[in-house]
Image (cartoon, rainbow, N blue to C red; front, side, top):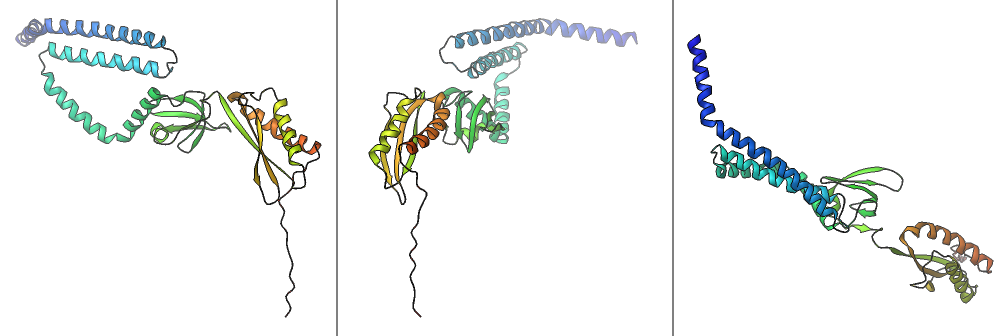
Length: 275
């Protein structure tokens, strides 16, 4: 029994003697590398924070990406410390990565789309967009999915690939938007009076921008009405409020000016057929 214990002790001492320095060196490399990776991540995060208009979602992603790259080199250095042939291991990991990539190509497609959304930034959190058949306010842009809140308060989590692979309409990107309101008046009404009245409605609203100047034009001679278009520009944040208010004000003003808003009409002619 004592001989067996002594053999185990001798074997442990031999292992510590042969690999002790390698273990200590590997631990030192791992500790220092871990600290450097954390320092590099913080430095990258601070540096990106000084860049104007840097997206708040993209900044931590890039910082963590750099950290993992540093840690990958640290792991390779630790394996070299033990004499492991890293070239063959990297080849094996590459093959395994290829197999995993083929199996998870849908997920990786979402990741790639998320990176493109974060880098190119066609929209940001708080923007109202229409993309991939979805319309709503962007809550958060992640690596795999994006969160959207619809106008009626419904929560949607959409795959990034669905959004990236479609046409993206961003209603919040530009500071100003144009409003067109079509108002129909009777053929018996004075068109000049109607246009002047609608022009005054637009000019009376302080939220309507002076440049480009608001204007009216006879857009269409319809089946039962003369369609006059009101065209003006507003700040993006005022769009819906001005649209609703102007619709109401235009109807009140056009009726007060003696013009009428005709209903669709159709003349029916009766013919008597003699038998």
